[in-house]
Image (cartoon, rainbow, N blue to C red; front, side):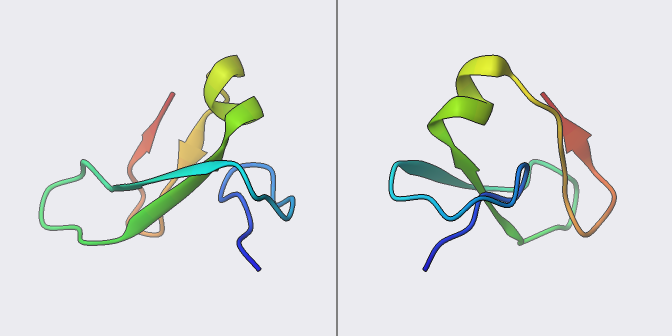
Length: 50
């Protein structure tokens, strides 16, 4: 089960990428809907982006 890091829904269609924050190695999961709507995500390290 993969959940979107932005909306929290269980998702099958998602993209996973490394946090662009300095020194951070967290992987961020975003569903297609959040990606298309450019909903803001916040990483555990505090970095946020569209």
